[in-house]
Image (cartoon, rainbow, N blue to C red; front, side):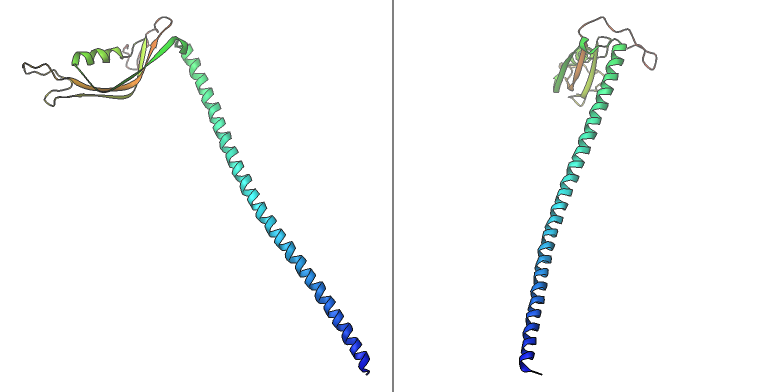
Length: 184
């Protein structure tokens, strides 16, 4: 064998090895770049998916709220129709808010006030809070003091909060019977 041919082969094999190494290195770099790009694209896709899922859940909640509003409007419409059938048009009624907080009244004044909010064909009272109590522990709520003394009966303490609806137009409602058959 000739040394020159051996050196030529070695050079060619080095060049070939370097070429193969360079091609492999370029392929590896290209694959790494592609992998990093694909991984960031996957992260963006997951981010978009979570954003879309959040928007979808918000849209579903908005749809449920809208359906509730539609249902409430339908119920209100039915209630108004029933009220008109009973002669209780909303335009024929006024509202007065009552708010008494721990007010002390004589028994006669408390009786007059409670009689003024008692239900009748011309008024309806809806109480949010009602509390009536005695201020003197020796007196009862439902009995007048039996001992004769120089002092008048102790006042009652009244807490009352609610809405008094009263008829502003039209005649009174026809009497309605209550479940026990008694008239209001």
